[in-house]
Image (cartoon, rainbow, N blue to C red; front, side):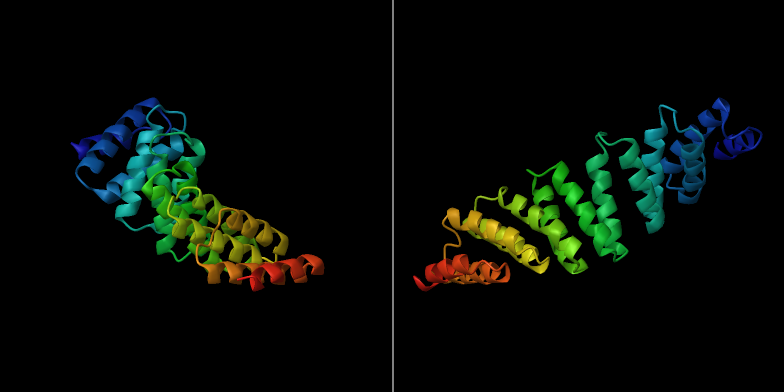
Length: 239
């Protein structure tokens, strides 16, 4: 059946409506029977030639399956990005975003992985997968190890704190945020974040609170705010 469709397709222009219908039939056949290379060839032709076709979205997803099956990671990245740009509110987007993050992970692209896991979290912040993705994003931003990456990690980590009820988890998220601001050289923002944590009576451990007040004092000193530094040191010594 596929060979007869292929023969007919060879007689037509790729951009013709008749060719589109044959490509759709072939894409379905190849996808159903796991014929990856046929799916890639036909799927790529259809996606390029029939952008406005009602089935364009469906073929893109089938093409993505083929690219994943053949481990064409760079093409997976490009196709995921095209899909998310073209169909930003589609029900398949959460899955496509996750595939994009996992593919960047395989490519050892820390910046791409961090950004993609952040997108997964932002789309579904209340789900377990969303929270796990947010945590992974922060970890990868730290691995990127640039000021700009730390500036992305800091607000993301504090945002994660609002998704937990466990005081230890909340404290951990805030402390990651404070550290990220410090690594970025943003001493004032680090102290503002520390203040929001302390207002909640956290960290629960007195020694940890003492250490946090000491860090706040150091940050004030870096900012030249010596009076504030002295006040923070007094709070640290009170423990």
